[in-house]
Image 1 (tube, rainbow, N blue to C red):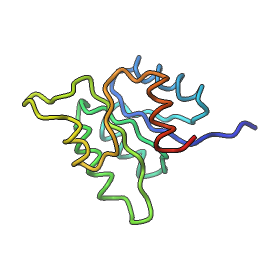
Image 2: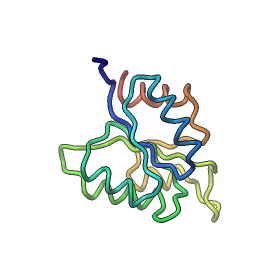
Image 3: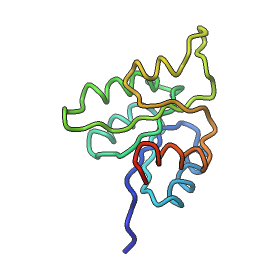
Length: 130
């Protein structure tokens, strides 16, 4: 039986991006779940603990910032899932720095899309020390 480096949740509404992330993260030794929207992500985190969550900001129902804030409110003092924001834009539609907004919402880091294998590995090594 193979061992896993951990469990990752990819919250992304674009199916192709989900599939690419699954392939990359599986190749790096991680078990991967996906959510198409914020509501699905909140449902999954209510039933399972994730080592790291890659959170798209532009979701069709609940934006990624709100999902992250909700996760943080529900986490106990002894739990802190790493949440990494994913966005195609460094600024939001009002010209405000997305990274600052993400960190203020309780996310641990911010990366711009696309999520590449090299970028995923860098983030995983930084936060999970793998």
